[in-house]
Length: 330
Image (tube, rainbow, N blue to C red; front, side, top):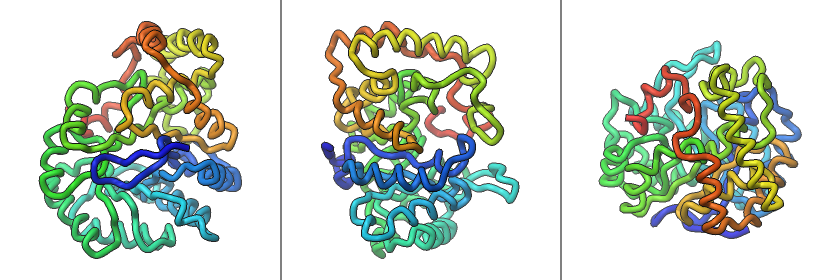
């Protein structure tokens, strides 16, 4: 495993990270034993960056990771935690709260659930429209001074917000969706991060399995986020799977899987970009990690661009009700 600094001021992390959200029901039922085994396999392979959110499974994901880190595993991990998203007892989303007093509360519960004394990278999951970003970052900075947080990150925010946040405290990285079919950051957001020395942790590199090469039409069941995701809906799914088949031809010519080509493409966009893979099984993790053995030359990248042109995806990456809350989309 190779390692890279997460931005100019962030920690050293593995060049590929593990996103743990899918282990807590967002994509349908997950097996607890297999999830923990996958986290252990990732750590054993040298993966250090584990990403979660306190609202994933309403605390379930943090407790799962906490269990996996028992027995001396904590020192192997760089924990990245998002906060601020609110849910009700039925599991519905009900907005965001990034007030300083709320942050102190969220962090206290996170430390307890994870069973740790500090968080390596702590970040608001979205911009709270009712709270200036300066207040949010300032509150986390107080937690840095107190020793409960090591670094501050951002998630799904636009260029102006990134600059305002960085003026308050050094920002290690921006977590944002980036894949062959989600390339919106290339316009203003990625150049802003690079100008400020801020790294990018890219989630959704396989677009929630859509461009993994494994997805089959109609596979999303009850409780699976993809059942309401626009790109998986009738009228869009067939067009998007056609892109996958075009990508498959390139993958076969390289002796790689579709998923490996998609992950390798993200990694090839710059050493300041760390792909997060959402594997929740050891076989999927092994496939993802093998993407580091796939070398994409200029001809390969050009062929991929022809197979999956920018803006070729059918449908938005989130339902409209969620997009309106995303500063990165403005």
